[in-house]
Length: 319
Image (spheres, rainbow, N blue to C red):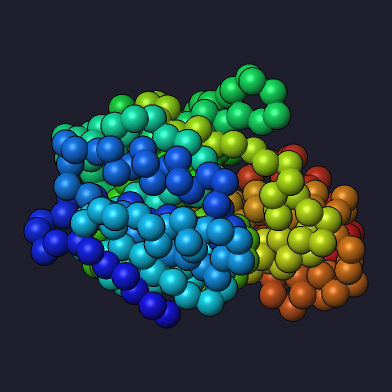
């Protein structure tokens, strides 16, 4: 891994972390927007995760004393984020994706909101767009404007069946990350779910804002929609469900333990849809599921008649 840094040794308010892989068409626009920030002291950490297109040359040409470039062999997006977390120095952290768009001045506005609410984690809203010009809100059921504990937020999200786990929604206090030794688990997909669950399970101060300062562009050609990637996603879902169950077993708060089991069952619903409709190696994925997840643990997540019917369906297919 190589590190190129021009950043000065002053106090840094916000670290912006962006992993990139073959993002030459989009990353320049995002960098320009971020580096136009003047009202908040930032460092921009970009991790070039083994790009094979013109990305490397493009970002090596960035000249700004707030910019840090990490270059490494391709290890995946989560390893890239961990590499940036290891060296970041900002009091707050924001994660972005290389192919999306942000509102001008959003870093300053997020930073101000986080300070004013005294949150450890603040979660914003965003617009979701696809091939058409229409856009919809990423989430609609959150307790906007309220301060609550991480455990209370878990209860809210599970109860309302809305888990806004997207990393680019968040601004997080760095001391909170370090206090709880938080990092990304290895893997290729869906581990942002676990990052957000661990953030909440640490039970810090959370605040939700309906400010839509980010535009998430759904790309039908992205790797997550490729048929040869569906089995990888299924394996990742298995790892996510197993980790939520492990966390539930360790949780001392009995009420939160129940809600974690419930969320494991929700993720199992997502997994089953992928398994039935898209997975190629059904025998291999089924075997992995049965080795990693027990029926008894998923049974603990049942909370409604609908859950009962789903559990029966899941058992018939996988358990």
